[in-house]
Image (cartoon, rainbow, N blue to C red):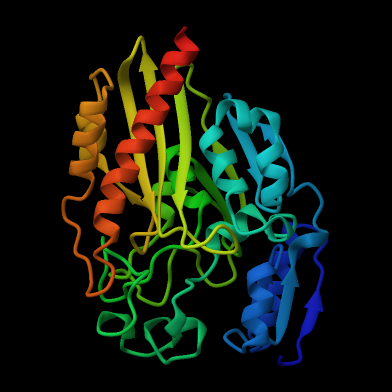
Length: 335
């Protein structure tokens, strides 16, 4: 690991100042929340900062608070374990609690933060093993003709990574808003606009500018009829990312879907929303037959690579299963 200077800002304003000072001095920097992923990348010299800005010392960024106008604001430094246990999140935003508790292992969830999970870099083995690929400053995505079992079947090109976050699909499905802090001030970005496809900039996965911090995430008021869940398929039981996952949020009134949000994980470079599936469900009574049709609609436009075609039937089954599960919860609650 390269030697670096560790800094511990008092608050966000101080963090922005430290970042500005490092950049003005021509020093490279990295921003750490929980640091569970960043530390490994530093050990492997995938990231070699001169200055590490650790946000852990900033008080209050790990809290869940009521937001003006309803809803809740979640500090970016809350650990995934703590987030999964917050009563209001479990009761009103189940999809997010379930996504948080599905990440990796208990040890990692005790250290990893929500902001860190959302902003983590890809786990493509070419990138993580130091290949000069599109993510490492090169001009080639080696997965196109190489090992691509776990790569994208939607939205790929020129990079075919999949976004590794479990919480990201849940936040998009919940219509969350991200507060980003930087040298030019604060800005609010809808979750659906935070994640950037490789056609925008193949070296990045989101709209964060250099030196910006994802400070907090606000969820809108919980919808009275809302029901949600998160399902995930992995290649082993722990310490791994989703091969395919689905975050589903439905407003169900007397068995009829009034509004739907369906977002996939593990299949695209960004959380992959399925608007045609949402339209199919809206205004309809959720039956096993309709759920199956939704699964069929979910795979429209899939473009698997040589070794990941198995994800297509997985997506079909995952979407049908998850929609049926949410609908069943809605019926049980109505009873």
